[in-house]
Image 1 (cartoon, rainbow, N blue to C red):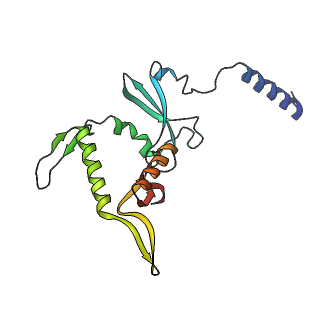
Image 2 (image 1 turned 45 degrees about the horizontal axis):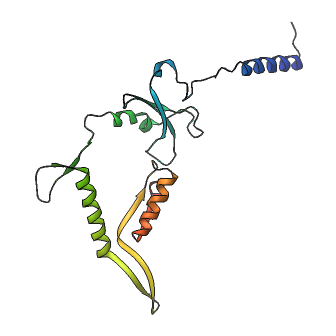
Image 3 (image 1 turned 30 degrees about the horizontal axis):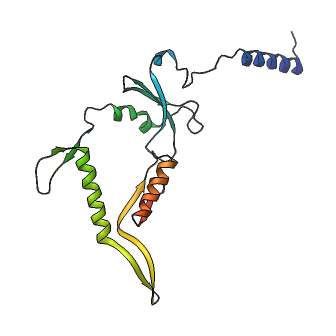
Length: 188
């Protein structure tokens, strides 16, 4: 039987249209996961390793991560992950991962467990002390004094895991502290 090009295109169009009208998705989506992830809580995230921003789907059961895979609907990676992104599950579920604050005092040979409140207060105090010690209010340039309000004792770095809002807040915080050495992981 001989099929003309025109009849082939008509038949192909009819077949594609009838498949499209059935309403059945061609692949598993985040909202309707495949059977192997049925009953699990699902959310999307971005890989924290580099500045590419690959999309990931995280599956949880009872608050514990049970699976991480590439997001097939993400425009950047379309479901694929590099070796670091593929290994992210091992980072989340690792018995050696620290979940409590560990502190080793100067000249001590042992670590002690501290509270998160203690750690946050200590970090805030040390940042304030460093800012006060290294703050330059004015600078003389070509014989004239200029207000610079610069903190030369600190630097801040952003990361690929931060979203736009977090980067915005980090930038505002850095500038409020007078930090002029503000960088991002993707440029280093």
